[in-house]
Length: 78
Image 1: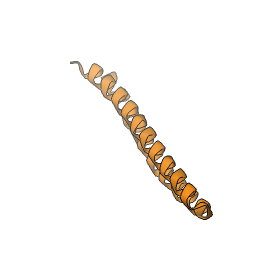
Image 2: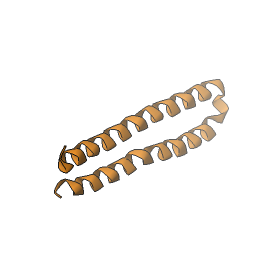
Image 3: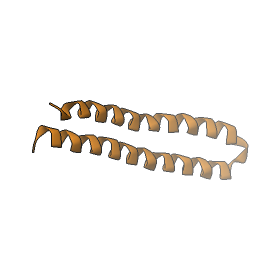
Image 4: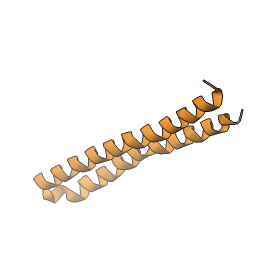
Protein backbone atom coordinates (compact mmCIF):
# COMPACT_ATOMS: atom_id res chain seq x y z
CA UNK A 1 0.00 0.00 0.00
CA UNK A 2 1.30 3.42 -0.88
CA UNK A 3 1.90 5.97 1.83
CA UNK A 4 -0.72 8.31 0.36
CA UNK A 5 -3.38 5.62 0.24
CA UNK A 6 -2.62 4.54 3.80
CA UNK A 7 -2.76 8.14 5.01
CA UNK A 8 -6.09 8.69 3.25
CA UNK A 9 -7.51 5.53 4.79
CA UNK A 10 -6.21 6.54 8.22
CA UNK A 11 -7.67 10.01 7.80
CA UNK A 12 -11.12 8.62 7.01
CA UNK A 13 -10.99 6.12 9.87
CA UNK A 14 -9.81 8.71 12.39
CA UNK A 15 -12.57 11.17 11.59
CA UNK A 16 -15.31 8.57 11.11
CA UNK A 17 -14.67 6.43 14.16
CA UNK A 18 -14.09 9.50 16.33
CA UNK A 19 -17.48 10.88 15.31
CA UNK A 20 -19.17 7.50 15.76
CA UNK A 21 -17.80 7.05 19.27
CA UNK A 22 -18.80 10.55 20.29
CA UNK A 23 -22.32 10.08 18.92
CA UNK A 24 -22.77 6.88 20.91
CA UNK A 25 -21.38 8.52 24.04
CA UNK A 26 -23.62 11.57 23.64
CA UNK A 27 -26.67 9.36 23.25
CA UNK A 28 -25.88 7.34 26.36
CA UNK A 29 -25.13 10.44 28.45
CA UNK A 30 -28.29 12.23 27.33
CA UNK A 31 -30.44 9.14 27.90
CA UNK A 32 -29.13 8.66 31.42
CA UNK A 33 -29.70 12.33 32.20
CA UNK A 34 -33.31 12.04 31.03
CA UNK A 35 -33.81 8.93 33.16
CA UNK A 36 -32.39 10.72 36.19
CA UNK A 37 -34.58 13.76 35.56
CA UNK A 38 -37.66 11.54 35.34
CA UNK A 39 -36.80 9.98 38.71
CA UNK A 40 -35.95 13.24 40.49
CA UNK A 41 -37.33 16.27 38.66
CA UNK A 42 -36.15 18.65 41.38
CA UNK A 43 -32.50 17.96 40.43
CA UNK A 44 -33.03 18.91 36.78
CA UNK A 45 -30.74 21.96 36.86
CA UNK A 46 -27.83 20.16 38.47
CA UNK A 47 -28.20 17.13 36.21
CA UNK A 48 -28.30 19.25 33.06
CA UNK A 49 -25.15 21.12 34.10
CA UNK A 50 -23.28 17.88 34.71
CA UNK A 51 -24.58 16.46 31.42
CA UNK A 52 -23.46 19.51 29.42
CA UNK A 53 -19.97 19.28 30.93
CA UNK A 54 -19.83 15.58 30.11
CA UNK A 55 -21.08 16.08 26.56
CA UNK A 56 -18.49 18.81 26.07
CA UNK A 57 -15.74 16.45 27.14
CA UNK A 58 -17.14 13.70 24.91
CA UNK A 59 -17.20 16.09 21.93
CA UNK A 60 -13.49 16.81 22.36
CA UNK A 61 -12.77 13.33 20.95
CA UNK A 62 -13.97 14.06 17.39
CA UNK A 63 -12.19 17.42 17.46
CA UNK A 64 -8.93 15.62 18.23
CA UNK A 65 -9.77 13.04 15.54
CA UNK A 66 -10.20 15.80 12.96
CA UNK A 67 -6.83 17.27 13.94
CA UNK A 68 -5.25 13.84 13.45
CA UNK A 69 -7.02 13.56 10.08
CA UNK A 70 -5.60 16.92 8.98
CA UNK A 71 -2.14 15.83 10.08
CA UNK A 72 -2.52 12.68 7.98
CA UNK A 73 -3.80 14.75 5.07
CA UNK A 74 -0.46 16.55 5.08
CA UNK A 75 1.24 13.18 4.54
CA UNK A 76 -0.74 12.36 1.38
CA UNK A 77 1.36 14.52 -0.92
CA UNK A 78 4.69 13.15 0.31
